[in-house]
Length: 173
Figure 1 (spheres, helix red, strand yellow):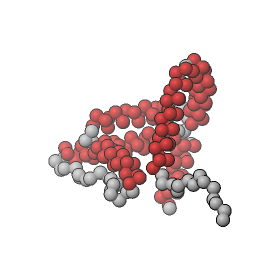
Figure 2 (figure 1 turned 90 degrees about the horizontal axis):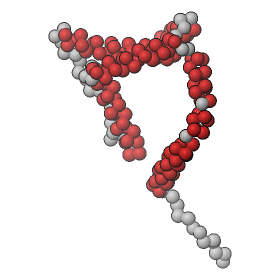
Figure 3 (figure 1 turned 90 degrees about the vertical axis):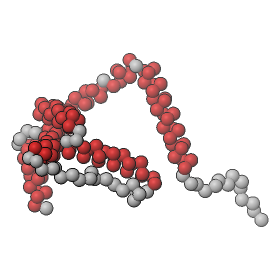
Figure 4 (figure 1 turned 120 degrees about the vertical axis):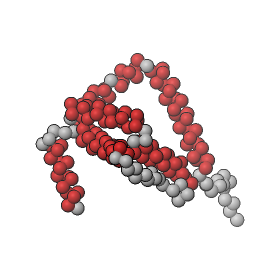
């Protein structure tokens, strides 16, 4: 609990006194995590030792229920992708992510949270004008999306077991 308190105090100090935005802090932390992981693997290989090889974290699909097997599969794919980035196996993608984090760091240092909220609000006010200019296209795309969602809802409802409906009224004897 002492470490959590210290981390909270550091976070409070950095955001209030240091002037860092949440976006900047998030970018810095993730970038440092990525850089340390990649450099550890690269330096270990240059020193002649082999970097530790380990299996990426994964969730056992057999342990998961059938209803969430697809989610577990997607999570396992994400864990393998993330492990490849951290281990430096996919160095080009790692460098692209580092560049993206540098851009978000820069944007976060230029704009604080209230400015970003103001920009989102002003952008949101432009939505009605964009809708009026492209009303036919937007309506057709929304109709397609609604039909697709209705089809998905119908498929889900068909798979849910239900009791039979008895339309006939009870006979009195």
